Image (cartoon, rainbow over all chains, first blue to last red; front, side, top):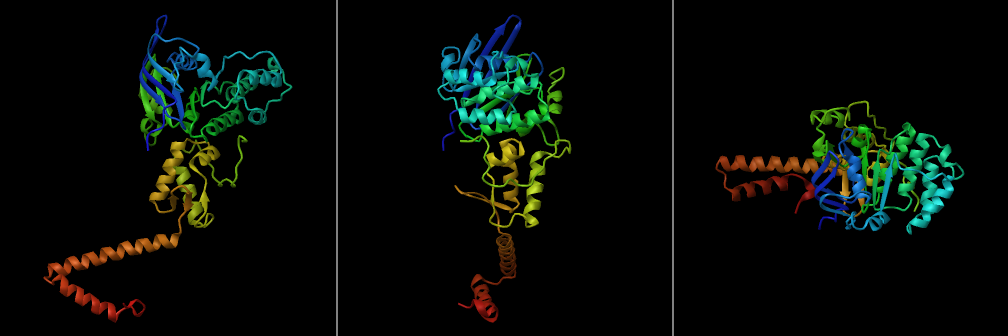
Length: 239
Length: 139
């Protein structure tokens, strides 16, 4: 049996922004997996996710997302990709109107999945986006990222403002995506224990460098937590 | 397809992050207890790896490890293309007995050789034991 084609392949990626430099020599995201992206603030997590989503250029290296170069074909990459960030603006519409707008952008938008997600994330189609609490807005962004059944889902700090029940829904939604062996999730979060709980693999970044990469049990030793492992990697600062 | 339709009732499992016990260990111990107590009788189809991961909110790699450990312990068996089942304990016990008997016989043969009894004589001697022995198992 041949190994399935990775959904993301990176080779010698370099991104420079002012004084900051992100370097990732090699990285692959296999389908059917949840990959946790962890590291302190300023590690380069958001920069990396931005690039994969076709939202920012690179300075060097080769990158393929779903077999496409996100710098050259960002639109086509985003057809098969769901991107969520806690600072993504949400148009001031009612929730149901926003879903209708998004359905026009995505040929594969799945209305029955979306109404199911709205129920699970306790959102009403009639709610106005500007009236939503921080946690509700986060949940709305998650639904927006999943509604077109993307093959790869990028979640940048998707737990911002979520209470325990909201975080539980989020973990459920992530593991729901990988019920399909063809799909994958990359999730970056300061909720290190949640990442450790659901991630099959980890990419650990600090100050723009790869500190560790591999399967979660390989990187986090027996009787240890990811948080403790991160301190051992001496990344400085809080996770 | 609906986002979360469970066709089988989920297993009564509860994982604690605060306990300090790794999730794969907690899952292993709880499923093993369900099997040995008879709550999950032999032949029960267990949830698939991806389903159990979603039910318990742990990674796929954690569930794979749990199932591998349960299989190594002889509590479950994976049938190619069919799924994972609770293993019949009787068969498990029989297998153990078979292995132990083989070991005893191998030791006996080895000792008989050390004492200088040729293999042909060992065979003849054994055949007399068989005819004297189990009346249900005569050739």
